[in-house]
Length: 175
Image 1: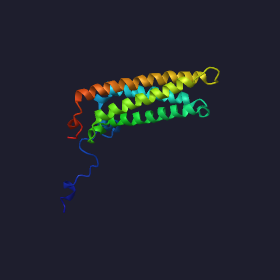
Image 2: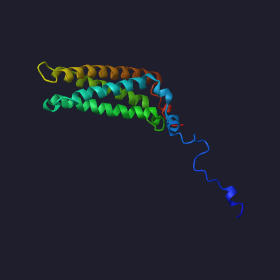
Image 3: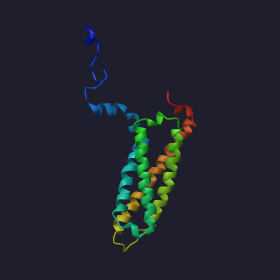
Image 4: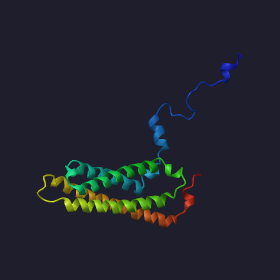
């Protein structure tokens, strides 16, 4: 019993810890190659410009025009979904589940481009002169067009990646 303290380790951290630097631990979990990919760059553009788009709509009394309810729904929903998908890609969660990720992203970006196109056209058609907030709505229509274009470009890149991958499900199965 006398040799008990020498055999027991009382360390609470793993031997590979970085001395309490939690930021280094988080970046070690991030997929930095994803962050440098064209897909991630386009998602960042969609997130930033999408937020500007819905913020411009939200800063107007859009509740008085029923069409802007659709614009806000599309803008906020796709903004939140894109943030979620960005986090999934950033932390490589997509590699931990058996889902054909390339196909999922291709379908998502295609549907998002079509939905954003309808929201942009609705926004542009209802932003008329004489309305007190016409500057906000005109700027929102511009950002809606740019975000629509970003989702369209993402859909094209997703399609090209899917075509190159040929829907290979084996690439999505965890090792």
